[in-house]
Structure formats: C-alpha cells, structure tokens
Length: 237
Image (cartoon, rainbow, N blue to C red; front, side, top):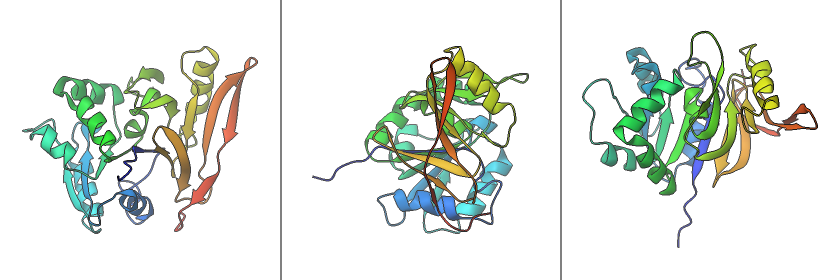
C-alpha cells in the first residue's frame, strides 16, 4: 500500500514573482510531487487575481517540466472539484488573507483543499498563501495595523511571514504571543520556507544564504525564539 503524505510548504516571502531569475524554490516544490511532470495550479485570490501576478507565474513555470494552470474567482470560475483534485501542487499567492479566505469559504474551496491535501496534493504558498494553512496567522489585511487572523487550521499553531523584511512583524508577533492572542507557532523570513509533512515540521529550506525560520512560543513571562536548522538549496542570493 502506498503511503500518502500530507505536505504543506509555507514560504515566508520571495519566490517567482520577485526573484524570477532564481528557480530553486520552484524546483524544490516540483521535486516533492509524486508525478514526473506535475500539474501545478496557482491560486492568486489574495491579490484579486492580479493579471501581472498570474503572468509571472506562467513565465516562471512554463520553463519547467510541469503542467501549469491557475484558478480565477473574479472571472468565470471552472468546476472546482475537478480542477483542484487533478493537481499535484497547489501554489497560493500573497495579498489580502482575510479577503481570500472569505472568497474561498463562499465558493466551498476550503474542503476541496483539505481533501486534496489528504489525497497527496502538495499545498504551498507565500505570505497570505503561507499563513492560511495554520490555525492563526499574522496578517496585514487591514490597512493600518498587523492583526491576528483565524485561518484554516490544516496546521496547528500560528505563523508570521516576512519576519526579517517588515520591521513591525517581530514586535507585533511577540506582543500577540505575550497577550495570548496567538498560539505558539512559526516565524519565516523572506527566502525561507517551512516544509510540513503530516502536520509536523520536516525541514526548513532556503534559497538565500542568511534566511531563517523560528519556532516562537511563550514561557515564564517572555517570548522564546528557537532558531531552526536550515537546509540551503543552493543558488543563494
């Protein structure tokens, strides 16, 4: 009997839209798929299906041995079940997490994504597409402040992306941690990704020389940050 692994990769920031010259992360995601020529679906809901973002995805993934497609909710939407369950990799883009989750829930996408994950489809995403898989995420969906947001709960705990590139992220995450507003979880810097299998952290990978990720928790009245081991994927920037 073939063992099915439930895989989720949470990317702190970067990737094909901002680093098109560096394919290392994209190739890593494709390598985790079971298929020799994986079907990859990009979901850009958090950006409002930004056409430039979609074009950047195709410009990147048309270079690889895969079958790229995308899912739009702001033009005519295809049959979701056949599209989602026909993928090997699903890649969720960044943007407004709260708006994205509202659209997904209204269309019934969440349960399809859960079913896809259980059937062996790798779920991945950057920024909004990283935090959405956790119980909670630190989001900039609101204009004036970072807030804690209840997310999908495919993974336990909380997550903050952009931990090094946005100066408000670390103090906000610490503040919410100290006030018990967020659960203990993971902070991921730009250029790093946390790879989970069956709900447990398998490894942190990075395509930049200094990018890190942390396990963040609270204890005895203070916030603890545990720096996690990082596997460098090469071609670091």
